[in-house]
Amino acid sequence: MALGYRLPLLVSLLALFQFALAQKCWRNVTCTGPKDSAFPGLWEENIYAPSSRTVSPKRKILSLARPNATVDYQKSKPYTLNGNGSAVVFDFGIEVGGIVTLDYTSKGGSGALGLAFSEAKNWIGEWSDSSNGAFGPDGALYANFTKDGSASYVMPDKSLRGGFRYLTVFLVTEDQVSVDVDAVSLEIGFQPTWSNLRAYQGYFHSNDDLLNRIWYSGAYTLQTNAVPVNTGRQVPMLKKGWANNATMGPGDTILVDGAKRDRAVWPGDMGVAVPAAFVSTGDLESVKNALQTMYDTQDKTTGAFDESGPPLSQKDSDTYHMWSMVGTYNYLLYTNDTSFLSKNWNKYQKAMDYIYNKSINEYCWDDEYGAFKDNATATALHPQDANSLALLYGIVDPDRASRISKNLLQNWTPIGAETPELPNNISPFISSFEIQGHFKIGQTARALELIRRSWGWYLNNPNGTESTVIEGYLVDGSFGYRSDRGYSHDPSYVSHAHGWSAGPTNALTTYVLGLSITSPRGLTWKIAPQFGDLKTVEGGFTTSLGKFQASWDKSPDGYTLQFSVPPGTKGNLTLPYVRSSEKPSITIDGNNINKGVYYVDDTATITVSGGGSHRVVVS
Image (tube, rainbow, N blue to C red; front, side, top):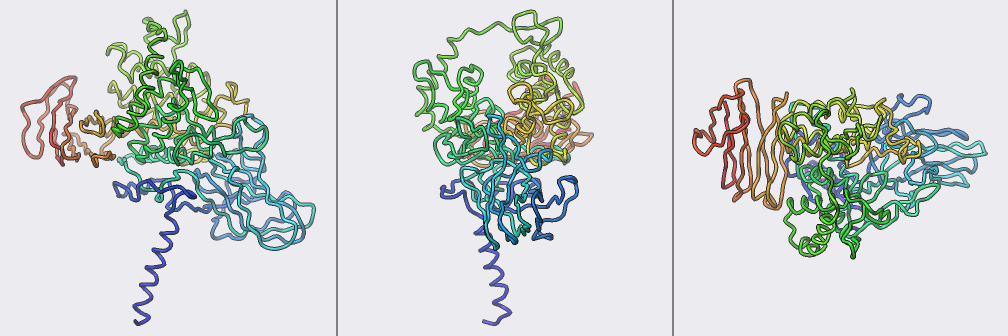
């Protein structure tokens, strides 16, 4: 064979070899995740997940005093540290997590290289941000050397760092030492059963780039929260340093609350995280194992679920007990996993008996104000959470719903909704329910505005991860969420990759695109778009029945809706009027639709049976 023919073949084989190296799962776990994206397209440019499980930094910060002055990582290797206290910061560009390998060459004596981690730029330096839960210093890891030469340092498995963007490497020595940092790499520890971290089973795309990025930041956060089951935060908590080597539940992967911390199952967080995971990554294996943990640790006498999974295992929360039940419903809706249901059915019934036996207060409606009070006393507190959930779950009539939605606006600041029950704090977790509540009653503009204000503010914040959703922050724009309510006045403890804040990922698909399923696996479905100020939106997700996909394109004179659903399914199209109080003209696949249309509240609802692909024109 001539060399001219061999060279292209050699290049192709090399590319395949490199791709094979990149496509691997975490350690010795079985690869059970999808291999390919279900909906390839230009929107994949918004996926934050890297294409390889082994990644390198994007850039370097050469001076702690000038954190905004950076150089390209690949073009500036190696970087030389000279003398005690010299330091360099490696910026991975996005939230990452796992095990770092540091290749270096030392000269001139003995010493140690320190490694410190931070999710936010605010805390780059020789001390890692806080994660251990006891509010003692996380400090740093150290690679000791006693002689000149080249070496590699690999972090101990127990010291896996679940979430960070910045790695500070600094030199500690009493000699005239110089160290060349030759290479830095990270073995990503999250989404352990996926060989392709970009193989999303859902997608979203619109003409608004900020909303697109917010959707994908929620999806990527959920990936960072899907972790190996033996990498939970150690309990009892360490007073110094950190350890992520606790077992949290069954299987190989499990959904936890945050990448950095707490690294434990929290069912309340799953109230937001599970629906968001379904429409985006499609990772329900991690959800199943998280739920099974709650059933495995259920109180056999009372039927009560713990507030959190092991090893944390906090107890006595009726609210989180019910979130375990809601999570079970959602998981079964998405999967129809009858073996899981059969295994846990008796426990589910016992859990239902437990909550029914608790006394339920009457609604604390404050008619003068126009919202629910926090309790049945004379309090003036009208909480964001209760009122948002009242909208979302439809427990109020339209008049009360309208008043609640309007009064929630009084909590808004330029960067999000202040939580009255937690003054000076902004909780994207509770705001996730608020945006869904506004969408639920048709207040689309309000929901989109709050998404842009709150999630857009954080995603565009240069001090954050610029890739994930944060646990919470303060109304002054600082990251000191819950500083005086359990977080020991330590703003670095806040998690910057927290799945309970991923509400827009689900909301944009379910309400703006309008696509959702209404029975297990999507045997029945619904498409009810909400336009707001958008012009084009498309998206989709998958179940075991196949792909569900929709798109709409709006113009001043009407809109076109296209959708594709699996064969044998049936669903309702709820189509907004083009002009208020004026019944629109509707065609499906070119046929005028005049019969079987249900008109209510400026919408027209039509049932479509048999599945397949269809084109709807409304004018």
